Structure formats: C-alpha cells, structure tokens
Length: 445
Picture 1 (cartoon, rainbow, N blue to C red):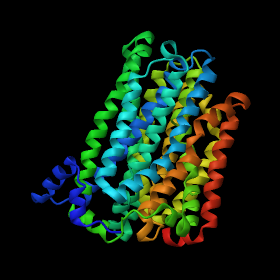
Picture 2: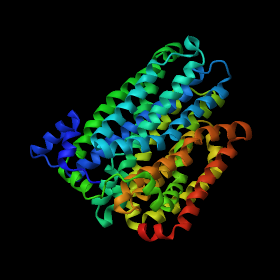
Picture 3: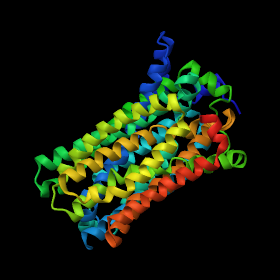
Picture 4: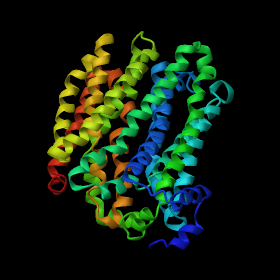
C-alpha cells in the first residue's frame, strides 16, 4: 500500500521535518549528495561493527571471560559476536512492519537509535568480577540489539543509487555503499590504537576501551540526519509511492523472489568470508599466538583499509568495463588462490603479516565493492527494497557471521592451513552460485 504525503507528514519525526525544511528551501538533493548520505550511513554501521569486533579480541576475553584461558575466552567472545547476524533477519522483519505502518523515517530513527544505544551501552558494561556470568548475558543482549538494529537501518538508498545510475555507470554506483566498510575500520582501529599506545594495559582494560563505544552514538546521530536529508526529498517519496522502493511483505518477497534471494546471498560469499579473515581473525591470531603488540597490527589494518578504499573504487571502474559478474568470478578465483598462500604469510612475521593484510584488502575491495550490486540489481521493482535487505541479511549470516569463530577454531586445532581451506570454501560457493545463475549473468554482464 502506497504511503501518501499526508500520511508521511503525520508520521514524520522532528529530524525528518528539519530535513524536509532544508529541501523546501530550494536545496534539491543531487546524486552526489545521495552518495554522501549512503557513505556516511554505511560508515556508521561498520564503525559500530568494528568497534565491537576489536573489543571481542582485546577486551572481552579478560573482562567477561577471565575464568577461562585466552583462546577459549576469545572463542566465547566470537560466539557472542555471531548473535548479531542471527538477530539481523528478525530486525528486518520487525522494522519492516514499522516501516509499513509508521513510515520510513520512524523506522530509520528507531533503528539507528537502537544501534547507537546498544553500542554505547557496552561502554557501561560491568565485568565478570562485578556481576559474574550476567556480564556475558548483558553483552549478548546488547549484541542482539545491534543485530536487530542493523536489520532495521536498511533505508533503500543503495537501491536508489542503483535505480538512478546510468547503464554504463552501474558498477561505479554499486561500489559506493561499500566504501563505508574500510572507512569504518580505519576509524575504529585508529581509536583503539591511540588508547593502546597512550595508556597502560591496566588503564586501557579499565576505562580506555570504553571511549570508542561512546563515539559510536555521536556518529549514528550524524548518520541519521544525513540519511533523513535524502529520505525526506520529494524525489525519494515519489519513488517510494510508485512502488519502486516500497517495502513489500516478507512472506510475499520470499514466495516470489526466493531463488533470487538464495543465489544472491551465496554469490558474494567469497568476499564476505574474506571480510573477516583480513580484519577480525588475524587480529585474534596475532594477539593469541605471537609476541607482537596489538597496536602494531591495528596500524597495519589501517594501512590495509586505505588499500581497500582504492580497490573498491577500482572495482567500480573495472565492473563497468568487463561486467560485474565477470569481476566477481575473477575475484573469487583470485581469493581461492590467495587462500593457498595466505596462511604462510600470516605466520611469516612482520613482513608476512603486512603482505597478508594488504593483498587481502586489495582482493576484498575488488569483490566486496560489487557485492551490493549483486544484491540490488536483481529484484523486480516492487520487491527490490525488501528483497535486497533479506539477501544482505542471509549473506552476512552465512558468509560472515561465524567466520571469526570458525577460522579461529580451525586454525587453533588444525593449523592456519585449515583457515585457508575455510576461505577456499567461500570462494567455491561464489563460483558455483555464479555458474548456476545464468539469468544473473545476463542481467549483470
């Protein structure tokens, strides 16, 4: 059911009314501003994501699980880390109902405040020494809150970019939302590196690690207004009411687009598996199995994130020349090859770790840069909004949710080569999905 202007106005938040006032004063939103809104929004999401991920390695094992050894505590932390990916589809379902009943701005406002609030609340989390096992319960509940919020922050802006992209520039526009990942990682890593470098270990574990979680709330407020600045535009509302970006029933979407959702979720698995194997997992390996200071590897990851930004930008140019399906297939094959020598690099000292990270981020950027293009471009207009969200939820759950836990478990029990085999399985899934989906090949090529 389309939402009329009157209904949208009655459901507006104060932030949306402020954003709409800017537009009514003659400031028409250009495609470049849509891109900025998308980048800011995705950066806030990934910043929350990486702040929690880094703390899962550096803080939670000793704060929440001090009664077990460091390896077991880290695996427990990664198990809690996975809860967000399990909760994400539930968040999509609940916030989709809110979207249909109260409007997109209400959904987006509530989801971003839940995301920022859940992340900031971690900063006040007491440890095991204060409340015992309830600390892990509270952390798990906050992680579920993050996951549900991530299911609700889907605003359709990446789809809006895709719909407005010229035929010859679709690859370029598809990569724009993905820039938020390396930017979010860079900011999160730099904050943790700063506190690790300037504080004693005792001070860092007592209070220093909490500051990045406070920053998350402020970033989410900025992201909220940046998104509402776009959502409140007449152009966006017109597309919404013409059903090009209208939320459809989840049951209806699965019924008519189930095959698209399934294949779309498996197509980017190579990049989604690599995503955690060059960010979260290697940090845990360095902390647990080497004598190197964590701050050093965080700096390496910041450098890798820079290469990731350049590689994502390059993916847009390459995809527009050779086709997104071709780029995804070639990058999956390269990731498969990388999985064969990556373990030796990660275990190869300072230089090996640096090469592991930089090469990994380059390959990640090429593949991950076009994963949103796979998701957004394949649905019928009436179900693109909901279908894209469901596909993203499933892809993250299958490809990334358990990746740090699986990689750490395999490598600690069977050696780093087992982690390489895990990455190889993700690349194989991508190649199989691309091979099966000939229709996707025709649409993307």
